Length: 185
Image (cartoon, rainbow, N blue to C red; front, side, top):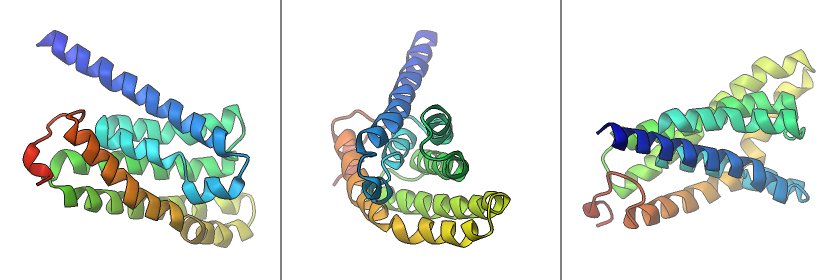
């Protein structure tokens, strides 16, 4: 029993480190096309998957650390943008993980989980921008809120389409624990 728990914890930490590395690498690969990073939101995918696959604790940590580490090591996103993004992504990882753990294992709950996480995460991002941006300039508050809602809608659609399909494929492959065949039926 003790060995199984230790193996499970090592597996979760390893997967979390992988998701954190992916949040670091994908935006670096796509940064030559700035509008692509805004539309695609490449750090969101690994954090959402971390919440679903590894759980809420790890999703929360990976979500919070990803933008902060990138901001203070390579300067992107800018630190003033990284802090609201850290709280947004932390909420993505937390909400997807906690809802996936407790909601019934039916395919349509993936969408409920995902949409809930994205709405709450985006609201947290906007609230954090309202708190942080005035420290730098009053014009940032309105612009930050508009950016958060309008410019990232393609990423919302992409998340709603791709994330559940990939999670269902991982469940079918029995990669995610607790999978039941009746879920896809």
